[in-house]
Image (cartoon, rainbow, N blue to C red; front, side):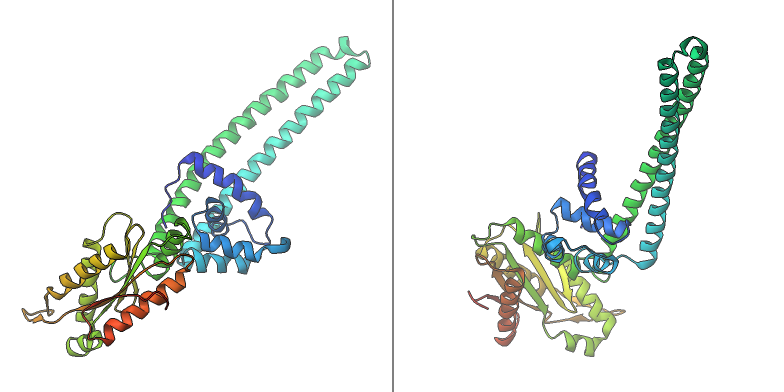
Length: 343
């Protein structure tokens, strides 16, 4: 998932996330922050429900629990990247902590000087200690100014480092949500997108729609032409899906030779039309064998189409669409089948 929050909005999320993070029994690292950022931002309904369930009765989350939440509901960032970002983040926080502590020490010294001068005045020592006290106050004031200036410089530098780390996390996370073979969204990305889509729709109203597509006789293609050609077929189908959806629609590789398309604002009739268009485009597609002009005939896909029923969960919607796909396969393939009202 990509973040497009403004500086002001992300700062507000930071303000809300930090108290929640500090209540847990997990370290304050980028993985933990990502979990609580998405929690307070409300962009990941499945994550929010899971955390609410885990933290009932004032229970806290330990390190393994936080990392499991991240793996299950956000993304699997490469461990090397995660470790490096975590170490850099800890360095930034340590630098801020040290500079803030120095500022606190300087403020304490300044306050003590004020208290001593006030006590001397109260004791009638004003005339003898006036110049002395003023000199002390001026010296402490200069020290405070230098410390505050250094603190501001450290905070500016730390802000830039944190922004760089955020960009690194976003890059790694985006890569973790993309299927390496096709460039489409992967299964994890689809799960997140569908959960958000269903959460945004009225639970008592139908919609959105879901397509599940499968390449017909794909094992035969692999057996006859080899796995490299099979990969080429998968990439070609992915390109067709990408080129024939628009707007908020999302195409993803569901696994193997199976694909899914989420249609957030498309009713059932419109979803069926899109599925039929995709089927026809694939049917008319010809792919050459690697290293020759030979083309493969009869490349087709079967599709199942479902529109979410009122109150239906994401898993129930997927099950109905998948059952419709299975019926397309049973009835001869290269066809579109609408899901039954009940799976």
